[in-house]
Image (cartoon, rainbow, N blue to C red):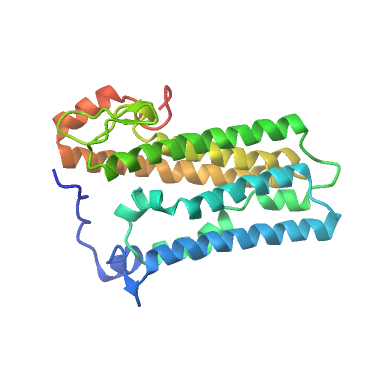
Length: 270
């Protein structure tokens, strides 16, 4: 079966403007879609550095909570940019066209909203901070979520690069539903969208420092907008993914896939 997604439904001119017409338009040999992703990551880094500068201006030093938060986001950004090739095989690249939605998301929403949890840290009193043990646990949760996401994406990346012929990767067997290329082993045996689960775990870890040291109820709640956004993003995306796969492979093969990997996103829970 061809590795293609279902075409988009008929749309009006306004809808085409919002969702886009082309997947990867180019200007002078530059992929504009990938350029927007890079600009968004750089904008996010700039805002994080600005918040750190504000903290130094207000209090003269960075708290442990803020250092942990900045370190986790630094890993998030550097890893995203340095392992960009893996992202070329993810949902965004295959399913999203370049329109107003993607441009606004990359240039406004991504750099300004993703770091929403840094502002409680910038304004928190010097006496309000994480213990060393709490900082280690939060960092461990973040790395655990990253391990799920990156491990799952790498497993699928190498499987696709081998055109489905790879039998093992890092000791994991590459098992699929017969007649498909739907992985049901390794990371992908835990849930059908285990990479989404990992990203939500990372987002929760990034919300914890600001929640722990926030100076008011508002600042303690503000960081949770980030993981809540991921839940709101990934649940509909998971439903869309499954609908696409069911349409692509047929009801019988998808039912076998769901039987072998019953959890949609969160292993043993959902």
